[in-house]
Length: 322
Image 1 (cartoon, rainbow, N blue to C red):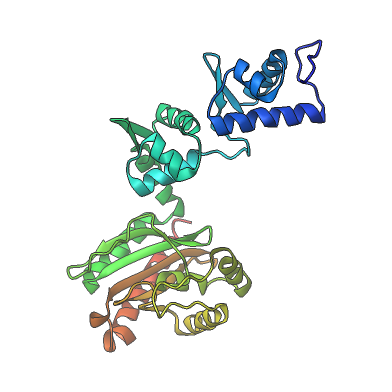
Image 2 (cartoon, helix red, strand yellow; image 1 turned 90 degrees about the vertical axis):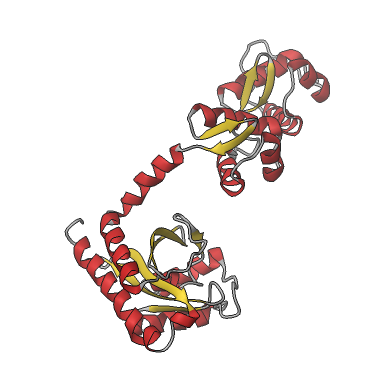
C-alpha cells in the first residue's frame, strides 16, 4: 500500500505518477467511484487517494460530484470527447447518452459530463432524453462562410450560373485537404442531389476538387493523397497518384476540369478554379448535370464557357474586396 505523506501535496515520484494513472484508468473503465472504492480496489490508503484526486481535480482531469469522482471531459489519454459527440449527433440527428457512448466507445458517465457542458453552452439541446446539435452551430456556420471574404460575390454568380444553365451550380473551397461545399444553386432542370452546404468530400473524385488540385504544386497534391487516399467511388474514379497528376496537367492546359462520372454514376461536371490577383486560391465553381444533358457541344464548349466566365467574374470582383 502506498505510504501516506506528512504533507498534503502530491509526491513528485514515478510511483505517484503511476498511481495517478491507475486512478484515471479505473475511473475511465468504471465510469465513477468514491474514495473508499478506489482505496480498496487499488490497494492505496484513503489519504493517498484523496491527495491524488485533489491533484487530478485541480488539473481538470477528474470531476468531484458530491464525493463521487468521474473522468472530466478529458479521458486518461487527454482526448476531449466533445468533438466526437458533435460528429455523432451530426450523423444521427439525435441520440441518447448511451447510444453516443456506444458509438464513441467511451463510458456513459464521460459522455454525460461532456453533454452537460455542451448543453450549458447551448451547443446541444436535450429532448425527451435524447440530444441534438443546437442552432448555435447555424449561427457559427453563417459567420464562418464569410471568412472567404467573397461569399456575396460567389453567391450572386453561382445563382446566375444556375439560371443560365438550368442545372446545378456549385462553389467549393479546400480545407484540411478536403473539398468543402460553400454554396449551391438550382436551375429549372437541376437534378436534386445529396450535396449539402458544408459537405466534405475527397478532392480527387470531382470536377471541383480536381480544379482546386490543379492550382497546387505536385508535392502538395501528393501530401493530400498520402493523408486522404484515393478511394474509388465509381469505376471511373482516378485511384492512382501518377494518373491524377497527369490529369491535373491536362486541366492546367485546358483551363477547366471534368468529372466524367467519377464521383457519382450518371453525373458529369465541368469546373474551373477561382484565384485572386496575387494567385492565391479562393476555390472552384462548377455546373453538374446528368450525362444525358452534358455531352457533345454542351460538354465541349457551352458549359465550359459558362463556368469559366463565372470564375472570371468572381476573380475580377474579388479584387475590390481583398
